Length: 353
Image (cartoon, rainbow, N blue to C red):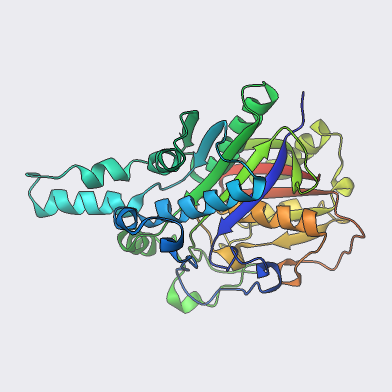
């Protein structure tokens, strides 16, 4: 089975991650209930006439994907695969508002057409005039992982050589209001959020878009080798360590062989216990967390994958991400563990290219 390499990584997030020096300028953002992405100047990338018709997630994805393609030197990928939890929710909300405001009559189809989850992958393909395999995964917090798994299979089966893989999610005012009502988002009085030792439930919600080029060929500029991915929809707390152990065993590793672990601590006391349980076995690994930088959202693992790629390539670990004081002379492999509210547990194993 051929190896799969990540040859480019681009990310739009709450941090200024499109900036080449963003790695040194990461700032915790834990004081608001909702965190907004730092967006680029879209008119530098997208014709103004098109910008007006694009929702935020389509704009973010168009720019992030163009960065990823440019960095890898790919004009037209062999496949475009996108993962999203909420899709184009801005246009969904606009369409539903139109339905209510117009008593379900005289509706224009534009918002409905643009609200489907596969709009992002479709718009990227239209912009590139790419007629290759085009697919969208909507699997809550494991949407990116399913997308990467598909891309890995495409490459190892010889169906594709270069695959554009991305994850994207946006915020909308109405949805955030509903999340506040059902206590998905932290109460104002529980801020600033304590991500590692939280005693309150709820999260700080973020947004962003992350895109990668997965290829079968390794370059001098490659970020990482994508070794393996595993996903489990449900886990009991006591199953956490066996779930990780069986995954590592499958890849001929033990807990002590993992150089760094990136955990998705979100500040939600109820579901963060899974990360605390997992952390107990990694006594010799560098322990890291990231959602105090990105916020929680369905495809937040895109941000952690981007950060893992940077760590493996630069061989530097940002102090702002550290949980413990373990030092490593070289970071050869990184394990990423993520879930959303205790559901859709995913593991990604990356190795230094």
